[in-house]
Image (cartoon, rainbow, N blue to C red; front, top):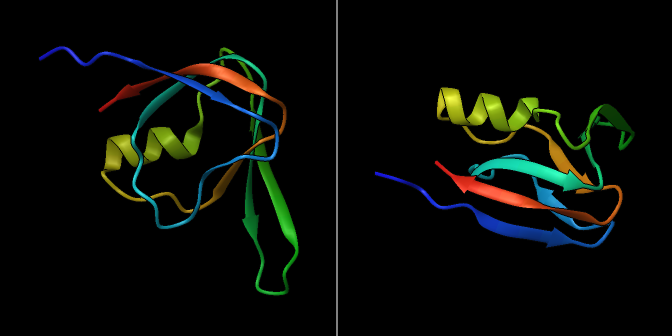
Length: 87
């Protein structure tokens, strides 16, 4: 079965995923960046990494390969354009 990709376009500040959400598919960025963070119990935010065009989001990779939900939050740090390839 062939899965077709879907266009993705979001302005900066858009929350793309949160802890506990299922992964809709693999995201391939053409422009922009995504900031992936964890929130500590005291409310502080810890930046884990950033995803730029050509990078692999480790959260998405882990969710797709292990069949689990996201454990961090991903926010468009800049306006993003790309595509989602459903799993």
